[in-house]
Length: 292
Image (cartoon, rainbow, N blue to C red):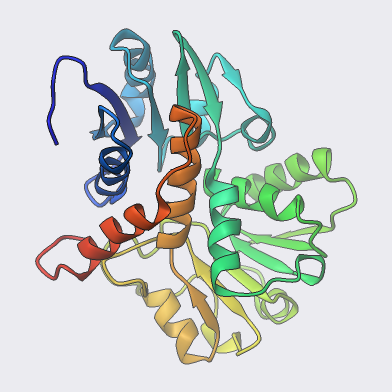
């Protein structure tokens, strides 16, 4: 990559960001597209988030991606939110429109496109169970709700956050049955009643998973089990355990690819080269000397 005085910048704001494959993936895309753009990782503490977002304007960044743990807080710092970001109250993509920052959310559509790549989903009979109630969970929940799913269950440590997610969904999708629960409550019933289980937390991002987010021995071959976490291996410990029970599994790389492609479309107005992006993350994943 040649950096010059005309090179434009896009960043990813997160804490941590050392694990992210987004710079490798997005820079490969920009090079393939012949665009003079460089995508850089920016490790930003929660206390410094407002300063970092102001810096997008001050330094003339084209925009940025936003990842854990900033998606919800960043939404409150935008000049304007597009529809999905406004519904979810979470932002994963920022577009700098001549000094006005517009918050978007491509997580949900990224998840849906990744899911459709591996399984033929009848969304009207889908009964998803989402683990977590943060920014990614909210985005995935809205994307599923827009597909007219049969019902949705949310399990989270903090019942109030689950309740807030339910209120958010009911405001835009009043006919969607939404049940909430906590890890301390009985989870066997919700698992058996679901056919898609989605871990939308960062559990398993670092190190080994000492305890799965749900009892995996209740999973069956009739479940599709998804994890938004991506590692050098597609199989997080949770997915490995679910696969051992016969479930179909989906790692986080597909969602990473498709949300990233949607972000590129927002920044440039051009369709992203999915094949190039997939090749970039796959080559990194198969490099045994590389970090996850």
